[in-house]
Length: 265
Image: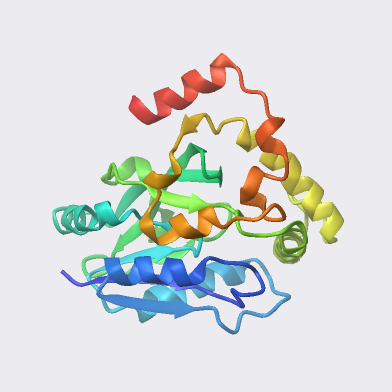
């Protein structure tokens, strides 16, 4: 089985993306690594995201293709298991992975299950143009849902904006809000097109999401690729203490019960 991994990368230095660490992880996992999106324009329409994802999928020559964002990682202990699981599920168009979402290194939430592994050899007609964000895989215009494909008990570790400053986040969220507005003609939950509006909407969303981060994680148990970068976080980066939310967010028993049900049941 040949396994391809593709990702998008646009000016990762200025966006504080952990791209060097991510690419090393992807190289260890796959037989082929494809990077697209280097010429992504600053101002764009939201449907461009799915188009660039599909460009990456098209360029991959593997039997299976895994799509990764630059804040997605796998643990080094799971790489062989991923390949084995894919090779034994050749009749499925996709495999779904649970997503561990981190804002700070010490706790996480199982955000969702993502169909990021796609069986290109047997299902070459797969497109990446579905879902509410136009970025999810489809076959014959029907979205491939995690409920209809095999689910591997191996997580994606997502480090959501953890290495970014407030300014980087505000500018980036505004850029994507404007892209959303160009295509959908509304702002959705993205606040507005200015950095101030977009950052305020993002922070409101983070406060709700971080309350769900009840599952604990020791720093030494993170993937080896990202561990040192987590240790080197500085106070101006979101992942240092979630801009103060680490000591402010109050969680109740319901949050803990729901999280443990999601993880163990």
